Every structure is written in C-alpha cells, then in structure tokens.
Length: 608
Image 1 (spheres, rainbow, N blue to C red):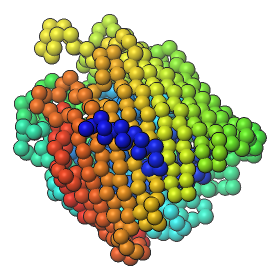
Image 2 (spheres, rainbow, N blue to C red):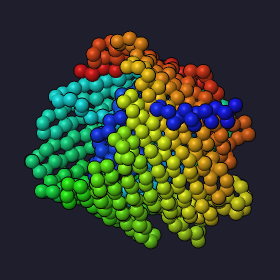
Image 3 (cartoon, rainbow, N blue to C red):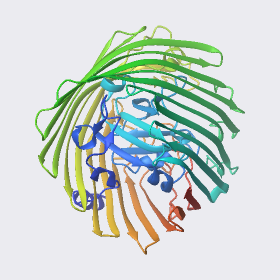
Image 4 (cartoon, rainbow, N blue to C red):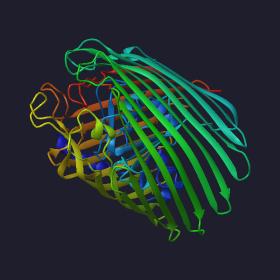
C-alpha cells in the first residue's frame, strides 16, 4: 500500500502543487543565494522562502514549519525547546549554517558546531530563506547541506506600527509577541519582545512527569542613511530559556538553562559603481545542565567574533562582481576546559547575464585555519529561462566541514588522532514551470562527503578501549529528487504539495533519522469574505532509527494531519484556531523520545 501511495504521489507532485506561493513572485529578492542580493528567478541555486504570515500561523516550532519544505526534515528529542535537528537533503545540523540578521548563531561549544532548532520559536523570525546544496564557497565551513538565513521582524510600512500575537493551547502553552517598528525615508528601527511558556509533555515514554520549556526573546534592528553614500546598521538578539528533559540514565528530571546573545554592526558605503560594507559581529551562548548523570558535561560556553569586509561592483549592465574577506575567532569552554581556533577567508563571485534569458555565476573561496591546511571551495550555477514560463537551474559545488572544537579537544578527543576537515562535492539540476494559477518544480540532487568524522566506540560504553572521534574511511552519499507545486482551483481555493525521495548512506549503510519518502499535500480555501481554512496531510515513510534507539522505539512510518481556521475580525485583527496532529498519531522522530499528541491552539494577531 505504501509503495502504491508513493508511486501515485510521485506522479501527482509533477502536477502544479506546492507549499509556497512565494515562488510565483519572480522578481522577489533573496539575500542568501549569492554574495550580492539577486532576484529569485535569476539564480541557479535552490532557495525556499517562508514569510512572516506563514511562520505566525504554522505553530510555535520554526523547525517543524521548515520541515514542510521539500528536501527538509526534522527530528526532536521531545517537545518545544528540546534538542532538535533540521536536516537538509539528508544531512544533519553540523552541515547546515544558520544565521540571524547576518549573525552566525551555530554553537562553537556543541558536539558538532550546530544550531539547536528546538529553541527557535515563531516569535523571533520574520522571514526565513532556506538555501540548499553545498554553499561553502559563500559561507565557509558547515554549509555542505545548505544555509538557513533568518531575518527578524521588520517594518512593512511608513511610520510607527505595533504588531502583536497572543496564543494559548494544549500542554499549558501560552505565548505572546509584540513588535514595535518605525520606518522613515532615512531608515527604520524594529524591536520585538517574545515570551513562550509550556508545561510540555514527558520527553521519555517511561517517565510520566511533564518536561516544560520557557524562553524570553528580545531582538533589535536598525538602519539609517546617514548621507547619500553612507548607510549604518545595527542588529542584536538576546534569549534566556530553560528546558526540562529526562536524562538517558537513572530517570533523572534534568534541565538546561541557556543564554544566547548576539550583536552585529555594519557600515555600507557607495562610491560610484563600487559598494563597500564593513561589519563586525559577536555571538555568545552559555548552557548549564542540572541534575544530570555524572558523565554529562555540566557547563558549556561558546563564543564567536567575526570581522568582515564585502565589496561589490557593477562592471557592466550584464556583469556584477563581489569580493571580500573575513577574520573569525571561535572559543569553547566545556567544564572549564578551554579551546579556540582562528581562521581567515577571502572570497569572490561573478554574476553574469549572458543573455536576457541566461544567468551565470561563479563563486570561489579560500579558508585558512591556524590548525589545518587551506581549503578551496567553489560553486558554479546557471539559470536559463528556456521560455518565459519555464526555467532550468543547475549547480555544481564543493564544500568542507572543519572538525568542531569539541571533536578536537573535548572529553572524547583521542590522543594521537589528528582530525582533518570533511570534504564534499554536490550537484543539482532542476526545472520550474509557471502557470497563471500556480507552478510545478522538480529538482534532482547529489552530494558526497569524504573523510567523515564519526564517534567510534570499539568496546561499548564501559569497554576497556576508549571511544572517541575518528575519521571514517569511505564516502557518505545523499541523493534524491524533490517535487513541489501549487495550483489555484478557483479564486478562493488552492491545492499545494511536495514530495521528496532521499537515499542517504554513510560507510555503515543507511543514515539514521532520514526519511526515504516524505510527502505533503494540502488545500487552502476561503470559506467567506472573512473566514479561511487550511488542511494538510504529511506522510513520512522508511526511516531508519539510530543505533542508540531503545527496543521499544516508534521510529518509522507516520501520517500527520493539521488544520486551521482563520477569521478576520477587522482589517487589522485576526483570530485563529489551529489543530496539530489531528488524528492523534503515535510516532517518534528520534527513537525513545515522545512527540506531541493531538493539540489545539487559539490565537489573535493584530496590527496597529
């Protein structure tokens, strides 16, 4: 039955379906796909855009919202706030770069340098771009699978405005977000305060006590046109949170307190055909664990400082050049043991419109780390409008991932073992067809990674030989195909959907927690002038559990249904009802960790 379902879905996905109408906005500007902002229809890279209205309406977890995109999956060790991983085309968090307003927010003190998507709630993001494929030529290490580029809430009209969202629902969840903005002819400023609290549910099936989460977020951004040539900007974020979890051994009710702080300042200067931007950023994250087993680390602190320069020039009406350099220092402290690294990078990119219908780009980067040999990365891309409504995209790229400070210097670093960066090669080709009432898109992708860094424990946890990080012989490969589309049946009714097939294997076989099949289909309908609804079903199949999953785990096939009703109270106020896991599916995305049962949420959004 499952095989037949996916055979039908693969054909259906070729029809005009997809989650995101944003692809219809052919002149939409994206910032992540190139060193200089580019129109989405003129880049060969695959980039998905999620706007604020969808982020507000889809649920508290931004990671789960992003997992609705083709080629993106999500696994979590519990509920909101729990350690969670976003995978892009089968590759996990250590291969995905994450930035918020240009600040690199991956954690230098984590096992692998990565971002915990469990802490990313809807109160922070105003827009998200998900750039897929090897992007080390643009973003350096840890961008083999892609980059998640997050912008906080910004003003969308002139003058002062206030936006607010309040929500309450299952598991004792309450949240609120308030955004104050001002926009003038000279610049803009935005301040957002968000708070979420939930009693949650038990992380583990064998523990009945609920594991809660609370977090306060504060974001700020401003820019000002000081002179005709000089623009200044500042962004900052601060988050305080506490999440409870069930430790692996001893049924301990544990918790983690975390604090994240980031700031970035920039100056942009225009001089004829040249632009210059200088930016400095700093990010710090502290995590303290309480009531955990003795072999757990208790205190983590990660720090990152970046100084960057980026220049741009319009060489002609058809050719643009970008170039620049970055200096970066990362520090990690784990239970008082300190480590650090320093690196320098230079990069460049040429964007060339060979004809009105053909856009080419070439990106090159060289990274020099104090502890490794230099790494070259490259990316070539093309976007060819075969017809006005038909675009072919293709990308070839290389990338690398430097071993994290924890892998090199942490408690499981092995004496006499020198870790080298992982290296990757990737390719993708896609075709997008646009219609008056929708679009259809298909993309085939392939990535291979050599010199994989993995944890090897030859004699088990209590064996005489130590476990630790080693370079794994062989090649890791992920390959597959993404289908997506959207079709308006009528002025008030639209169908959307996507399907991804992913074949992900490392030297030991199938990669864990990566769905081979991932199908989403939904409908949006306007029921009256004020009332609208959405209903969608997602089916995930053929998932391999990790080697650490307990015998009674529930990782495998599952089907989720979500529904929502939205009612416009006034032109500026909207009430909504959202039901998640409508059919109360009992499933797990990480072996031995619970997921939410059927959940109800009501909320109110208003702008003043």
